[in-house]
Image (cartoon, rainbow, N blue to C red; front, side):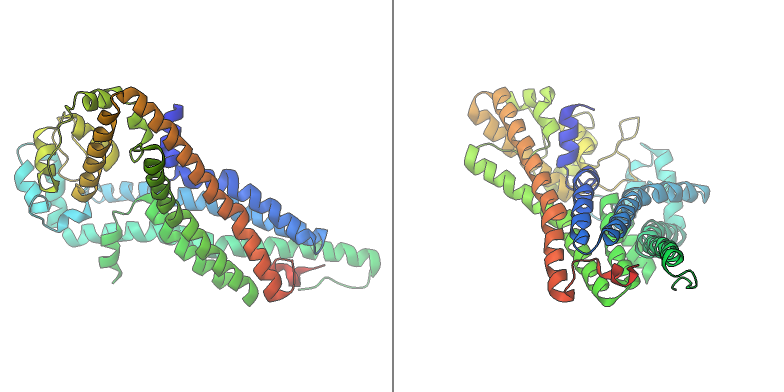
Length: 406
């Protein structure tokens, strides 16, 4: 993977890459170090217990959080196929629109894409069964990670601490006092949500994780702290980076008079830059013309760009996949950004130089976004929690471990 592809992936705040970088590479190591130092103020044993629990909790949760929905989705797609359906049939198509819908697509593509139409007809004929399967898919891809992260993992983690403390207590008792022993309508909702991206499913599981962690907290202070921490983490992971990216990109336009709203990969795409330079990037004029344009011009640069950046799918024969939903609103926003970039780039009179500058600024914005978000998650939030913990409980130790001292 090239450097530009890495920058592009990390800059996509609706993808998993920035979450992985912030969570596993920056946030967790920093929080583990802060946790150790904070609990060391109480005792070394408290610091060791808190650090071990934090390592297991953070990395175990991250593995389930990021990988769980993907693995379960793949299994469910395999199971749906065993029932005779193709999971590529998008649930949004059951709502008929003037330019797409399951009935509309069946009629339009019957001769152009007969195999795909068979999948549509099977789903339409067995609509209830197909919706139920998709509902189960959504339920499993969110409920299983929530159960593992929110209820099972913390319980096992707490149990491990109890076992270790019991062992330490027994050893201490043997040395000091040998005679002493150790101490003691879902379907409708899920059908609508079945088309969620993996990142959106991660956000849902995060909400379930918060409930699970609060539920399994060992005392009310730990429950309060976990509830606040997880709510703030959801905001800093899923909401704040998106608005921060928009703010940084707007600031770049004002400060440097350069448009950086597009993906970094486009800024090194010579075919795209040549079409901008010659003003020959053919695009639909408005949202209403998008689907017709994509169907009539499957080999156009705009159609190829929509495939890569807007989720448009084509079959091997060049026909648009009738099972996939076309998000006209998203494509229309993308079209507007392409027009803006082209206009600004042509004003500069040196499009290649403009694109290189845009790439540098965009890369800096992405790095700043990751850095600021990571700092807030890894340093600022833990320090705020430590401050509030001291104010509320009067102790520096993890609230759930206070009763676990040996």
